[in-house]
Image (cartoon, rainbow, N blue to C red; front, side):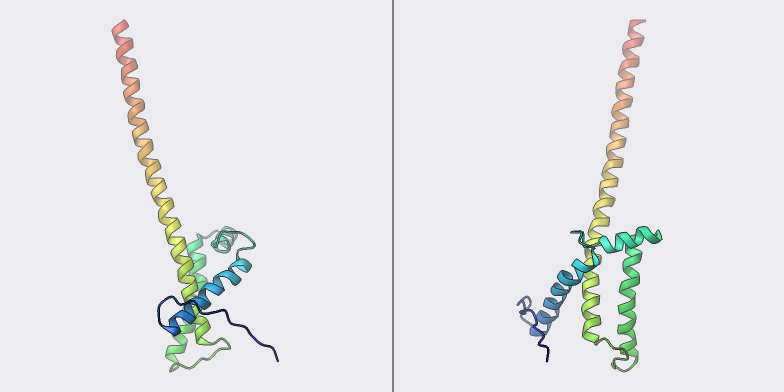
Length: 146
């Protein structure tokens, strides 16, 4: 008989069931994360790579994976809270939480990149204004010489 060793529960919330689920999510991020990222330290690498292959943004790739688990949860509820697949509902819930954590990371990156573009645009506006001021000074100097 094979013995499965569960990771020690990390006391995070004071609620044993929440702590077990969150510990499982952390374990999943560590184990499946290494598998899905292809050895990259970038936890979003899988979504990026697939997105590039099929010419979709990574958030749409993420949604496809997330929605699969969400539909399983919806099916569970519609079927009177009875599992109709070979995966326990706890596994689906854990996957949804894990995907939401990945989406959180994705949103932070998207927002950071958006802000960088905004700052770059603002910088370009300032640069153009400075360039115009310099050109005006040069024009004034040239006019005064003539």
